[in-house]
Image 1 (cartoon, protein in one colour):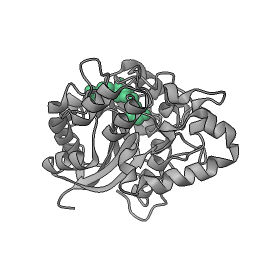
Image 2: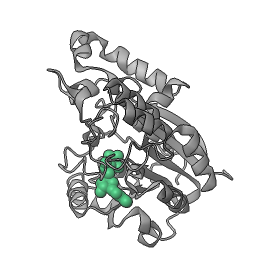
Image 3: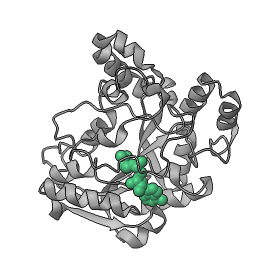
Image 4: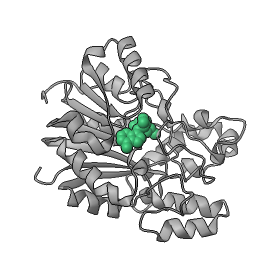
Length: 311
Ligand SMILES: C[S@@+](CC[C@H](N)C(=O)[O-])C[C@H]1O[C@@H](n2cnc3c(N)ncnc32)[C@H](O)[C@@H]1O
């Protein structure tokens, strides 16, 4: 990476507030969310980091839309990545399951060389269109491949940053997670970093319990993969400690673990309707809780940064 460069701006919308993501199985206890990862098929505005994070599910009810509500709470994931890429404006980035490029087109605009690996031909078509519209087609490579075939898809990538956001929950089973993490680790330069965004198990337990799904909540809490059974749309949910162990086995060391959406996913829409003046305070609360154990553990999603252990 080139040092001493200005940090890339990964949200060229100028800080368009971003949602507190609500993963499947938390605010969507009915299990109707989209584990296969087609949550961003529409190809919404380029550079809109928020576009793929519009939550679904019952917590989004109320006159105020979930997107409106979640737009209130800032984007700690983008903030973490901005800090990570500070001084690395032309970083090599691989986005595994990057979909239509909501995150990576802005990175390319900021000067990064981006490779998106995704099995969805539709998402990659949108990615190419977005990259062209943003004038960065020469900095975005779209590769149609699955995480399972990552090595053959990108070779010895030596990447400065590997993103794998909202994908691990779609692998075939818990047993597939260690090889997936090893493949992701294998893409990293010795000075690189891996960014994972995964659904949190404790949040799902709470959400299901609060929805009266006590049996499912018990199963999610007790099962090794954090699932409630065969009908569960997610293949795995994570705890910070367990994921840290899995990353260590892949030769990676966790450098930060943030909770994304500690309270937002549980918040009835009516609350913010009643407290429109509370948006900034909610954003501040989420930011505060995101790094604060034990409450960060309760977040709908866990954002983990890990680096090669020898770093
Ligand atoms: C929920 S979207 C997440 C998109 C983006 N990473 C984000 O966080 O906004 C999941 C993406 O992962 C892709 N995907 C699903 N299973 C995958 C797999 N086994 N390997 C790689 N990508 C996968 C889907 O095609 C989809 O584009």
